Figure (cartoon, rainbow, N blue to C red):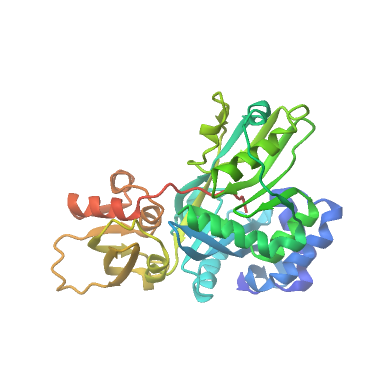
Length: 386
């Protein structure tokens, strides 16, 4: 078996493995799918045996938001191994190569939605957050009182402006975990399934029909109460036909306070995993609570990416953080020790007490734990499945 770049002459073989792994692609969608693969070919890793394709994986060039800061993130997707080749270590081979590629391409973070956890956990990804879905009764949205707000219809040709607005919202709300797709993918998907999309001066709304009696809201975010009410009220105007509204919703979304009755029902949610690829850059790129200071020595164990390993001095202040090498004479006493997966979970806001009980951290002191918990506090979530 050999890992090498994807040969674009093998697109039919890639489609075959993808279909056997995730289900068939509609025939009408195949030309668009091939165009996207050709555009993103440099982001693929493939495993061959001679000329025969055994497995393939790709990553997307995403931006991810962490407490008021935008961090470049490689979103791994489409990890597919031919069914007859499974059990030979092909999956680990393709994902090890993918991790090396993501590191070589300069990404500080990577995330993915796992079909199976052990493979990715063994390479340093760890469960970090969810894609929380809720259901809202459409009638409850119709009764939201909304002021007149100027809304403008938008579509695929407005993707650059839409992305700028959504990014501005995530930054202003100091969100942790949401992503932004690259423009070409966003435009492609909007053309494949044209949504009802509206821009306001301080917000963006996108939704579509989800069956005959339901709506699915892709995004509904705004900076003001007025626009927030206007968006949800607009969705509610379809309540005479749509009984239910499905939406992937931030844990702190204000819709829970705008309806007259308790109308938001949580649904089972998908879980995503995070990987720290470049520890110093990941910390430097992340936002931190502006009122928190910290000075803690941590030791990261990372056999897959040795550049992340070793003792580090973490310093946090004025909303920013940094990692610098901590020598043996740093006077740190007993440092906090973190497995690679534990460092990813800490970065996403999971408390040290949880990491210790899961075997992902040890050492250190109660004071160090309190400092790290305060510095990395977060409510991680993602609105998009990739």
